[in-house]
Length: 319
Ligand SMILES: [Zn+2]
Image (cartoon, rainbow, N blue to C red; front, top):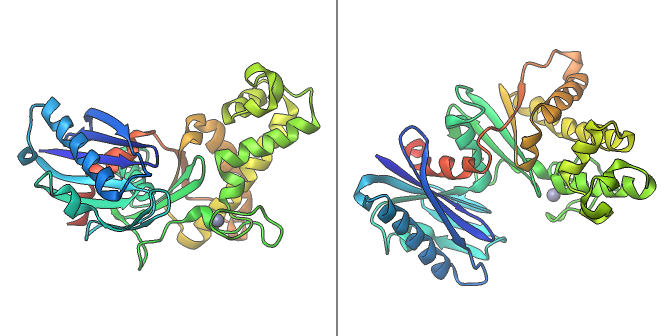
């Protein structure tokens, strides 16, 4: 039996055929073209799915289901995307649209939730029964998985870890409408902003010399880590503060949910122990009542494949 997983993004639709051992056998992608109607976007998605099946010499009868990870809020059992500002989708019956072209079960899920499920099924959190995946990328996303099931809350909107306020009052404004959200301090975007500000104050910093063409505007997350590992004090200070921001949000999560594991995903997970070791240290320092930290904090291992693999197996976790 095979499983089709789709990562529906704001710019790209990625489709992967996954086998029972969680291996992606074949994947293809195409542009989302999000300025178009939902019907047109979903027709292209269905065509990509059919193309993957054709290339692998199988048919819709050989697949268990199609699972789709999408930005926004989704109702998985109905197969409906309730709202996605990223895609201009509003109450779109994805199942009905896809089934015009392919006769199989169709499930949809928030993309961060799907990626979290992937890490639990076959990534960093295999065998863990109570997991929070925190995605540190352009923004900060989150997914809660307990006993192998995604916790969506009562109205499908749970897991918005990036929008807990960690700085009340004068915090950075956030796209969600609040100020001081975790996302504005702990995302890769935030790290780059913090590093650029520091580089303006300390023009001799390696933050600038290691950036492409020696330009502040070209500082990225990797430059910050590289500069710190080369002993640059400005980069070290930027990262120390950044790790403390991450630790603040993660300690809040542990205080509320006490998961057995927190997985740090997104682009920042490429830094592995350079990220998880200092974050673990600062979380330990903030633990409630000085208790010893039992929650493991680790880096995601599936990278960009987590979304496709998690989506592919949505149909098996819902039933
Ligand atoms: Zn926010």
